[in-house]
Length: 197
Image 1 (cartoon, rainbow, N blue to C red):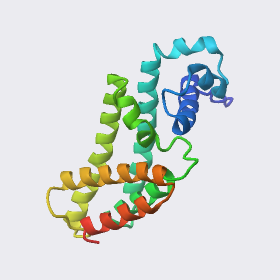
Image 2 (image 1 turned 60 degrees about the horizontal axis):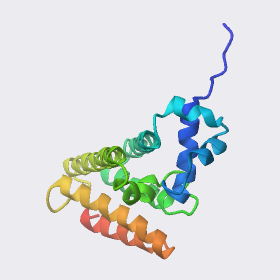
Image 3 (image 1 turned 90 degrees about the vertical axis):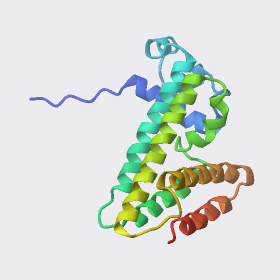
């Protein structure tokens, strides 16, 4: 049987281009034509894939979180490491990918969170769903660490997971404001204290 070449998914090409651009400029500052030009897709085809810019924004966030959660799952499922080591590897990966100037679409929750939550209910809900899924994974890893004894926490694992995520998200914003990694270094130190590592 002949091998057929995999045809790129035009919808996903548009979403990937949007993620790259919006990671730098935000949502409101980016026009549909700019995204289509970056994606190399004809202007008239946008509404074939998305019913509105709002639906487009929701799709961008869902695509972003699908990729982000898959990467996170890979980090948190590493064999040969304790839950505490896997969780700290996740935070280290966050420091490396969320804080750099050229984040290549890896920091959309940080970049778009506050901006779009007030613009669009469907985008706010996509952010809520995505960030809740991140916290779920942190909570499960903390619970696993408690069970194996590689970490301890004061209080409910869900509350600690939420506090850690909130702290790292805030630290990422502060890195942008200060143009310094110091807020993420502080978050990493406080994380170690909260997990008694």
